[in-house]
Length: 271
Image (cartoon, rainbow, N blue to C red; front, side, top):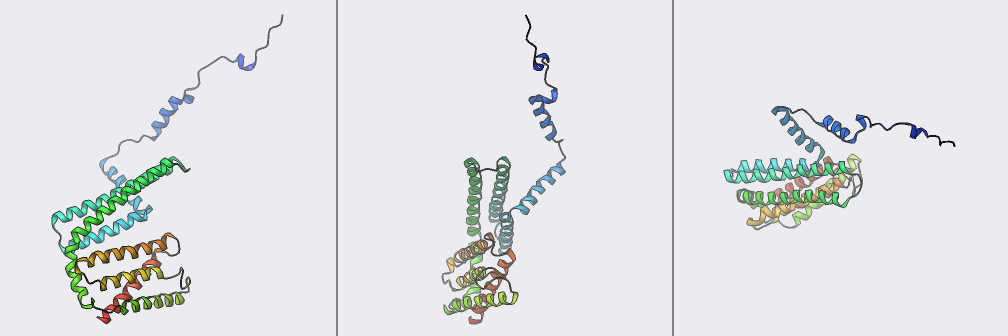
């Protein structure tokens, strides 16, 4: 009676897996490799500043927030707000910057965890963006309530001489802005008269409208608010040109400067 031959697998005795193949040990090893020794206080501050600089380099919205914060704080110091008002402004600005940084961190973590569409990932990004929106609205309200009275009086004095300028001045300023933009585009040879090129015609008209609206508003109590809303709309128009890739930031900035200065000069001469 012959016995069945053992296969090579049956001949090999069972033996424990090497220590390096143990999943638990692999997990411990991988954790050990990522752990860093504690750093000093100065190094911790360096990491924090690197985070701030990294957000500024990566996120254009963060740079916009910083620029607006600098303008608002400069205006607050120039008009001499009270200490409580200054504290309120600083806290509002800090809230916007903090939420923007958290939003950036959430987006980076989500992008790192998955590269496919996931409704939970979308929800996380949307919630973080919503936090930035709420903090920005709150900061805008605080800035308006703090600065509306100190800035209303000097702006009324500056605009009182041309408040009664005829409406034709607005039309003339807009037409002159269009002519100047087309002429600059023709000289530079960049883009077409109605699309692209240097400078941005949409930005020029948007900011020309902002200056014209600021001049012709007659109600002193609401002039600053109306002007701020017109400036916001003009800025959004300019931003859409950059977001769509039609213009660069420099082209939009030059267009805004051309529209603002042309309209300002027209109303000054009429006044």
